[in-house]
Amino acid sequence: MTLEIWVVFGILAATIVLFVSDRLRLDITALLALMALALTGIITPAEAAAGFGDTTVLLIAALFVVGDALLQTGIAEALGRWLGRVAGTSEGRILVTMMLVVAPVSAFVSSTGAVAIMLPVVVAVANRAGISPSRLLLPLAYTALIGGMLTLIGTPPNIIASEARAGAGRGAFGFFSFTPIGVLVLGAAIVFVMTVGRRLLPSRVEPVRTPQRADQLSFEELAAAYRVQGALERLRVRPDSPLIGRTIAESRLAEDYGITVLAAHTWPPGAALPGPARPVNADTRLEAGDLLDVQMPPDQGPQPPTVPGLERVPLDEGLPAHHDLAYLEVALTPRSRFISQTIVEADVRNRFGVSVLGVQRLGQVLDGDFANEPLRFGDTLLVAGPASTLAPVVRDQRYYGDFVVATAPPELEAQAGTPLSPRWPLAVAIVGAMLVVMVTNLLPTMIAAMLAALALVLSGCVRLATVYTRMSWESLVLIAAMLPMATALQNTGGAALIATMLVDSLGAFGPLALLAGVFLLTSLLSQFISNTATAVLVMPIALQASVGLGIAPEPLLMTAAIAASTAFATPVASPVNTLVLAPGGYRFTDYARVGVPLQVLAMLVCVAVVPLLFPF
Image (cartoon, rainbow, N blue to C red; front, side, top):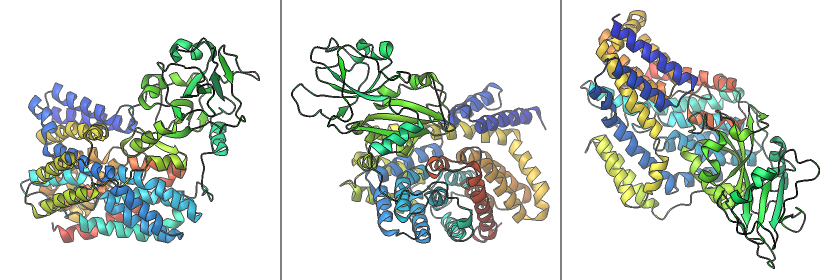
């Protein structure tokens, strides 16, 4: 091996280690790898920047807008509600119906968005049928990943495989080139789940057989889990209070008394009841009669501190407990931008209008000054705020958020739902036209997607402000920064070397053995790094391996794309796996026990079917 190959392999190995360790965001790791390649002279500045102008990046960006249109117009959520009406109470019927609904949705909407839409629906269906949600949520996540195999635009690895084929001078894959294989994998998954899989699926969470209500009992369970029971009080600003006209910061309630104000209600003297809860921050001014929902210091003892100008309002004084105040339990996702930040640094109160009451890590409550403790993946937070403020938080974070909403009052979920927009027929027409253009090859795929995205924005089906906030910039930067790694592997001969090793070790057993080897390599990598990064790394290797064995590249490219979406065996393999982790109460081993057999089935489908559709 040449020195250049050793350098590229060293940078690649360090990149994979950082991906697996999850110490840095994926996009930051990819950018570090890009800079390392450029600084060592492996690639030129032009080659380093080429990924950001690649048609793959533009196509995926446009498809984010198209998928968001189906979310914002309520089409996808309406489909989820329909499932709740027709699924019935039989576990088998629920599983089959759910999988047949989720897969087509995931073929056009991101798998994360599909699971976020369906998760509360599936949990509600499970509770109504008296079935543990754990029995349904793993199949939900796996089906969303399999749904990405159904179309060219279903998942980034399909697009990367298509671009790799086009770059080899053999033309791009068609829109439905992946569909027969995806349908067969979906069919195998349904049969597996209905037979062997049902014996492997755990029952970690007991079904809730009566409708949940955001009442005192439900909150008390959360308060006990985070050890904040008894710490929530209501204080009213007296008419003669010296705090009138002061901001919360100026009142020094936190500094002098350890009191955190969660929300405020306008309650003029003489009025029968206070107004609805409103969010507060350091600049909120106190008025006479204001009712404050507060968290008292944990070590207040039997007698809470007395604050001049404020009087306690007992919870049994004719007002609803925690009047119009909502509580959520949320968990940080693996790619949350708040990982390694403290609650103070994340500016949670001003960013979301909520207050953090407590933090759990690995099931243990963090005592002391948790607000200045750096957050980690999997940390769960108990947050409180006005229902009107929390509803949009639940809605927005469900799709492309920094955290999973693990526990929420049903009425808050209802407020957070996306109603069917009057523009939904227009969105369907635009997306349908895009699909027709893609299928008939009237225009290049990227141009068709960009035109559809522009049409959806100009027609008002997608709000431009939310496009920029929901766009998965991490994914786009990751792809753009990793594409030059493929260039470096090709330019230095690294890809050819790995391909030669595959051909030498497996080629003697024939192209089917090589195809199985490509599947295993890709599937293994996808358990620990994103399927997008996996696809970028494996596609040039698959191309070189096909050249080395003297076979057509299509079978290997197609197999690598399918394998990249079989991220079934670990909870961190894909965001959708993480989404169902807390609601399903799953353990790490649950994913491997159910996911590994499903990966084997997908490999058998590829080995048996791909060569028939794309001959060697």
